[in-house]
Length: 57
Picture 1 (cartoon, rainbow, N blue to C red):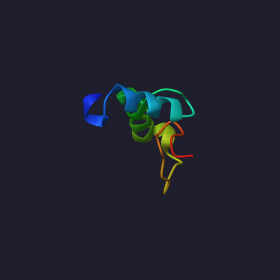
Picture 2 (picture 1 turned 90 degrees about the horizontal axis):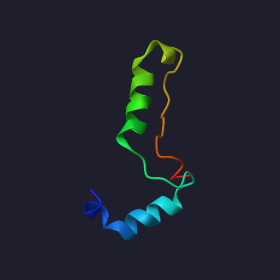
Picture 3 (picture 1 turned 180 degrees about the horizontal axis):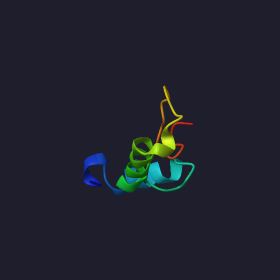
Picture 4 (picture 1 turned 90 degrees about the vertical axis):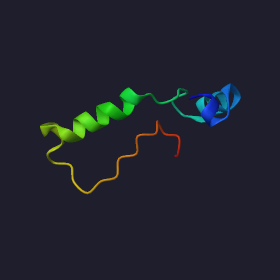
């Protein structure tokens, strides 16, 4: 995957540019999907949830 985004240097720049100082993992998306599919999200409607670690602040 690292090669598909431009190599380790690009990945490092993305990491440093992120407020959380880490690259998102599949589990980061999966936990949001599980939440939205659960009864815990029954009062959530019409929202756009950005799961990007604050990268686009």
